Length: 304
Image (cartoon, rainbow, N blue to C red; front, side, top):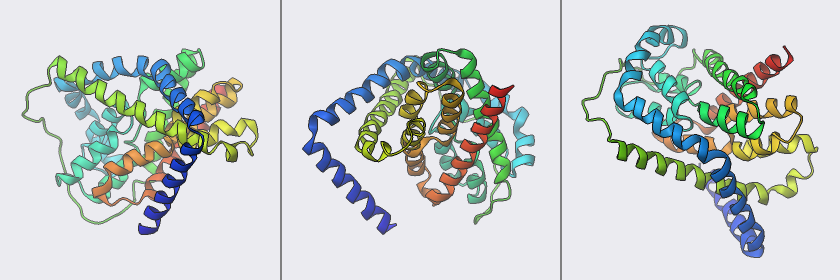
């Protein structure tokens, strides 16, 4: 971990030095990131965040998920809370699923084994980003959006089956129960959603700068692979550039990077999973396999 920390420090110092040498270039990169966020991400995600939180605060989703509790427990070898966390991760998008898994583990309601297994299918992007931003805005096709969303959902469920026998230490069972707390007021919901959206915007902006810093390396790749390389770093930038490719290739690349999440999403999730002591490589492998499955499903759907 110390070596990794030293490596990250060196990379950050190099980036700072590069920005100091070419401030105009990286100011433009930051501006492009903020523009992409403001025009392609925020209009689709903010309204959905507010509406989703309204549903969640009413507690109705929790009751609905009880229908799926036992099948999830049997199929994935997890506690009955897995279905609730899965649907929450789908509705709320990255990195809510990882945070919920970490919260359940820290409260002693699930074991490390269950936590590791749940991470394989409870880290997901939301429908408004996939259908709204990527499908409708970037590709100009709701149909492509729904194909990507279906592929993403199915890949998560199939991916979980690959890790159902994954073992760690400790063991505990948990049955989800309603919390005795007052639901958030509408003003609080709006404020919370705006804050979460601004966090997303800041991350997009930062990783646009990082991608531009890596552009000399990316330029060595074939043009069709550049969006994939960018998506491995930050999924929004990868999807934006992939949408300029022919639909088949662009949608397949988007399918992979959305389900993989990109380095930025993995780092966000890893920060929340810190107390689980889940290795970054393991979570990265889980996301890599989900991305591969999603791309394969999208390819088949586009063919047929």
